[in-house]
Image 1 (cartoon, helix red, strand yellow):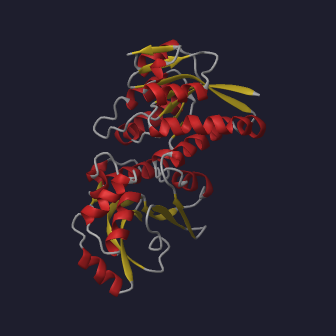
Image 2 (cartoon, rainbow, N blue to C red; image 1 turned 30 degrees about the vertical axis):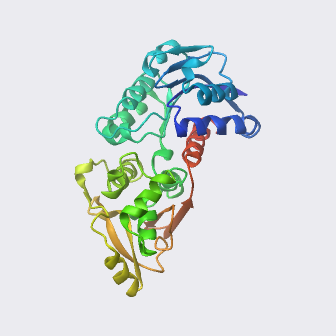
Image 3 (cartoon, rainbow, N blue to C red; image 1 turned 90 degrees about the vertical axis):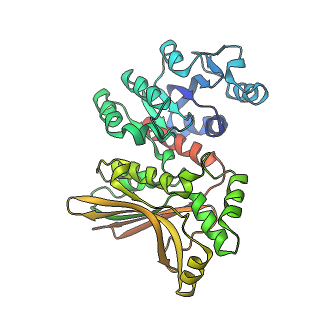
Length: 341
């Protein structure tokens, strides 16, 4: 039985869901995968809690719920940052779930750099640092002989990265089509049902699937960020956001949707990578899909991905998930990939 020491930075919706899941799945990890994951540290905006013996997850969740910060724990340090606390704890693994910052990736970028420099493995649900510095971080992980996994940062529990990296190994991927943003899919579905974009966005915000800044959804940038990560991690085609043609759904109106439906089509915001010479052309924009297209059938809060390959044909996966538990489960999936073999 291997003991794995983890440090969790970010105890918001995803971080709390991860702790709940870890508390539920501890016996499974021990019995099926022969390791025990102990959180020796947790950090949020209020401070940190550290215990080299392992923090009680139920106690930490109770304190976070009642007091709003893990720093209220008996082993808490109010005002301390996660980066500072990393110097004071021995760990095998960083679990990065801090708020996403797509401008400069901070503070998650500094957390991941510091963890990799220390020889810690990293599992990140935070796409900001990866969008900003994927090539640098991947190279640093390789140089230190550790893994940097991030399947939860690309459409939550939908195994977008895992399918491309593992299940399509040996293939030439000719095309990826991704319905990677649940918010825009929800909005377009509801607009087809007769309500306005503004009303549909309000619903998406109330049920908690819209980004804090909904323009990231509506203008296509959330989908573009996820496509960028797929391009780096699956296609081995390093790009920046400048290399992706991006158009959102703000110009789509009820008449566009009616006309598409009259032609036996529907409109979806699609992230596409298509083989072009030795590389790929990347785009995110609304596209008309025939109603029998696998991704056209997805409505509401569903997401999906389609891979076209040279030797394995076409593979399609889709998911319907609610709330942060899917992303937390993807983080646990990555932890198992590192330590459960």
